[in-house]
Each structure stands twice: as structure tokens, then as C-alpha cells.
Image (spheres, rainbow, N blue to C red):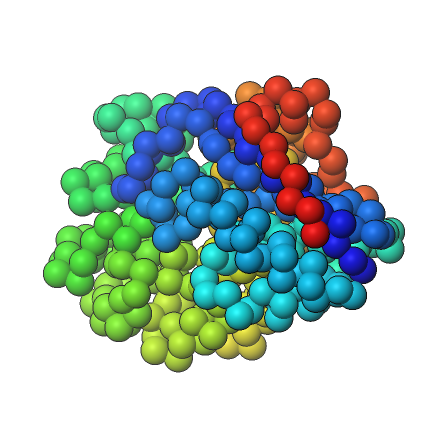
Length: 368
Ligand code: OSB
Ligand code: MG
């Protein structure tokens, strides 16, 4: 196919409640959507970078800049291309994986829509619905946390992930275990808030039968994670550190993790995400699908990925209502703790024009 151009859409969506992690407190989700226009039709991409470079080095205005200045022109020059060749067309440019992932997602959606094929089939999905976990932010008090967790369990979420940081770790985990029992699937996510010298404190979490601890140490500290994995019994899972299939292979080889969180944006797209899945399956490393407060567009595509056979742990594939009172697509709702994988061509969902217009703050057309 050939590129006609890409429309960038800045959207701002209020969150149903503030979402606090070890690196920020969010009250609204600002993000960039891409409407990728080709000679064979259009597709939607969602760029999951945040306003500020606090989760990783990427941020919205950086993504917009690299797209208009380098990525869109390079893709236009690569014509004829298809979704499978977007990666190599953009490969000369260092980093900016979330921006690249959004562009590839838009091309993939356009291509699959033109062919009448769903993304789930393209990726190799084997399930028609996937279990839903929920990521629970840091709260002002343990009582507030217990109320929030109780409400999510009542809704049917099958796995709880608690955000932790120094000063908010053992106590909230103990409280959740004591209140809701040992059968709840429970894990924690530190978003790099600790160092190896905290190993003793983190080992106190061993008593609570957690599924895993996600990214306790800095992104570039694979050796630290390998050392930590020998000092604690809770399985170590990496999120921020896994930026490609190559970094995943290195992490596995070093013993830096025994579980992998796959986020398509963080690794440069759904096709690289599938390669990481395949690598992990070959190494018997369980994977699960992470989230970045996606709109219904990114959520739809994540569900297609999460339906692959190696996704043996519930992901942060929660319902639209976890974050948004109004989504820009028909909302994803929990049914018996699961979400249904879309089956329509491409990512399988479309933005609702009125809802999209209501949250769009700016648009820009980048011609090919
Ligand atoms: O570390 O998984 C993370 C949200 C934003 C940035 C990083 C993370 C998260 C989440 C929630 O934990 C993910 C979601 O449910 O979309
Ligand atoms: Mg994480």
C-alpha cells in the first residue's frame, strides 16, 4: 500500500478516579491517536506515551515531533509497504517505540480492514475472550485501598495488581490478603521505585504468595533484577526493561525475570509483541498483557494479543469503565470477569464520532 497521510489527534479523557503510581498521579489521560490514510483505506493507531517522560523516555509531544519529522516521511518513502515492513522502514531511527508502534498499528488496522481479516486471527489468537485483571493505584489509606479492591472483586475482576513504592508495600499487601483471603490472584508493581539494597524489604513480600513482583528496579538494571531474583521467592516480572525481543532474550538468559509483561507500545508494536510472546513460549516463560490506560481502540488491539496461547496470566486488560466513564468506542464491559475479543476486521472497533470529537483537543494533518 501507499501512504496518503496521517492525521494526529490529541485527546484528553478524564479518569473516573485519580490513578497514582510510584512515578505520577494522573487525573486525565492525554494521548495521541493516529488516523492512518492509505490508498487501500484507513486505520487507527493509538500512541500510549504519556504527557511527561515519567514511565519511560517517551512523551506525547516527542512522539508527535518524531512522527511528523521522521517516521511518517520514512514510511511514505518506503511505498509500496505493508504492515510487516513498517518495522524495517522505521528501524534506522533510534527509540521512539511508542510512536513507531502507533504508526504500525494504524497500517496493520488499514491492511486487515482492506482484507476483511481480524487482528486476533492475524496474530494467532486461540481464545475468544480473555480474563480481566485490574491495576489498583496507590491510595491515601489502607481503608481506601480495601474499599477499592473490594469493589473491583465485586465487579468480577479475576486478578488484582497493587501499585507499590517504598512506604506502601508490605502493609497494603498484608491488608488485602487478610481481608480478601489467599485465593485472590494478587501481584504488585513497583515501576522501578526500589534498588537492590531494598532486597530485604522486598523479601518480606514473600510471605503473601504473590503471583509476581513487576519491575522493582530501574529499567536498565537487568543484573540487579537477576541478583534480586535470587534473594526473594516472589517471581520477578519485567515491564519497563523489556523494550524488544532482544532485550527480552537477554533478560531471560540472565535470569532477570521469570515472567514478562508485554505492552505493544513499549516494544514498538503488535508484531514485535508477538515475537516476544513466541520467544517466551519457547523458553516456558509465562507472559501477560500490560496496559497504558488505552482508549477502546488500543484496548481492542490488546485483547487480540492477549488471546494468544502464551498469555497464561490475566493481564491489565480491564473494562473501559475502569478508567473512563465514557470511552471513544463502544465500551468494553466485564462479563464473568472476562472481555470478549473483537472479531470484526482490523482492530475490530471504530471510534464513535461524537465521543471522539468531544475529547479531541487538536488535530494535525501530516501529508505523505
Ligand atoms: O506499569 O503497568 C504499568 C499505567 C501506566 C503506566 C504504566 C503502568 C500502568 C498500569 C495500568 O499499571 C495499566 C492499565 O490498566 O491500563
Ligand atoms: Mg508495570
